[in-house]
Amino acid sequence: MRRDALDKKAFQSLFRSLGKKGILPVLISSLLLILSVVLQILAPTYLKEFTDQIADGYLAHAIDMDALLRTGITLISFYVAVAVSGYLANFILTTVTQRYAERLRNEIARKINRVPLSYFDGHQHGDVLSTLTNDVDQIGSSLQQAVGMVVQSLFMLVGVLVAMFSVSWQMALSAMASLPLMAVFVLIVLKMAMPRFKRRQDGIAAVNALVEEIYKGHLIIKAFRASSKTGEAFRKRNEELREAMFQAQCLGGLFQPFMSFMSYFAYAAVFLVGGLLMNEGAGITFGTIAAFLVYVSLFQSPLSQLAQAMNTLQMAGASASRVFSFLGEEEMPDESGKKPVFLPAGGERPLKGEVVFENVSFSYDGEREIIHGFSAKVEPGMKVAIVGPTGAGKTTMVNLLMRFYEIEGGRILIDGTPLSSLSRDEVHRLFGMVLQDSWVFRGSIRENLVYNTPDVGEERIQEALRDCSLCHYVQTLPGGLSHVVEDPGEIAGGQRQLLTIARAEIKDAPLLILDEATSNVDTRTEEKIQEAMDRLMEGRTSFVIAHRLSTIKNADLILVMKDGDIVEQGTHDSLMEQGGFYKGLYEAQFSLGD
Image: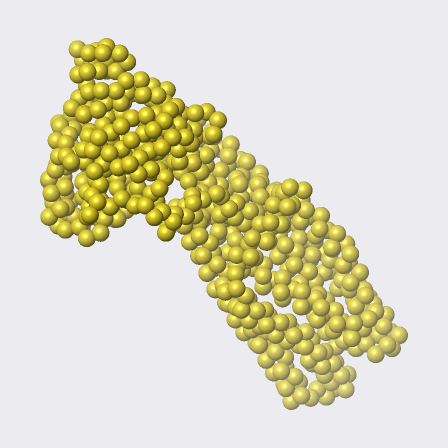
């Protein structure tokens, strides 16, 4: 019951989202399909005349070739018009459905930027990619086929029934004898097929997610000799997908042979009844039977097409339930024009850079609290290091500072202004950020450096390259700054990290966050980067997450976190003198070297 409700809701959302823009083209396409149907229904009357002319002329040994030619040309003209109108209708439907698929992809792409980061914490990336590609493609191709089939088949059924009963009600009833059996068969198969089509789309998403995961971790898989284990996991998912697709396609494949059987049954019934009526002299001719056979074919064809359309719509419904489930996910509130308070980076009221945490608490799932009453005051221009063991809450604090997640209790203030009073765009404008996982996208080196930072001069780019020891590396590339990075993997990890650091320097934000920014460079390069970072952090309030404690010995303030709480704070020297948790971390890190 729940699945049926979900599918119904998915179809409602699907056709509602098609919108007013799709109505007029669909109506035009429908009119062309109706014209095609009318011509196909009228054509058998000329076929009857054509056949009777041949039969009568054969019996009289005098066939009127001129009349036969005129009738033949008329009949051919009808079928040419049928072909042209059908092609135009399909062309319009293809255009509408592909533009609709394009619109769905755009909506999903926009949605990805509006859902909170917590959504991606609980969903595999491959699942989202499958929704964007496979499910949208399935919706587009299914609608393209199904809409035309349904419109044409329904009008064809009505028109053919009228034509058959107008010719011979006895032969019409004999042709329709199989209709109740066909209806029961279609309903049963459709009821059985829908859950399997849903399983098929879910299975495709699961396989895509696993492939994406294996591809990203390929080196680790090889290093730990886990190829057989991951291969077994893939085989299991692939087998589940094979089974789901096999069941779905088997059920869908029942329609065509069953309809063919019903067609042959109807042909036999028409021949039998038509022969009996001819024997009784009921006005039935060879032409009447020939025309009626065409009507039977036209009558069976829409039934088969309707069954196929239902089969296709099942696939569209399964994909639509996934697409609109994602589009219906809760979004981050729209803050455009709704946050009157804003902090300029310069001008009449320049940003000082004071950051205050007041009893901040946070939980990812609403049950297990990660940050417990975190309080700290950071003076303008201070270099603040956040240290602690894994899981202490260091990165979580940075995520809260950037408003990637919303705090559940307390406040974070910048220059006395609550962070919640600022829009996310404004908060992100105030911060430069370098993460441990460096990100380089497909594009030129220049585009990677000036990423979303407009009006950057050449002098500023060259200064950032010098500070980050990238001048020689860029000069060795073919094209220099214009060199296009086709695959981020072609750039060494250390060079990627240097590029992201130069990107942050070019942005020149008043506040700075460094999340283990030197983790992927060697010791000699680390010294150069540290000097560049010291220059970059001058006059800026900076937050540095560090596991290498040697890199933050000159920090103005060190916040030592454990289990979501600040257990110690102070300078390196003062914390070492206290002989507490920080000193234990420091000595544990350097005991082997000592």
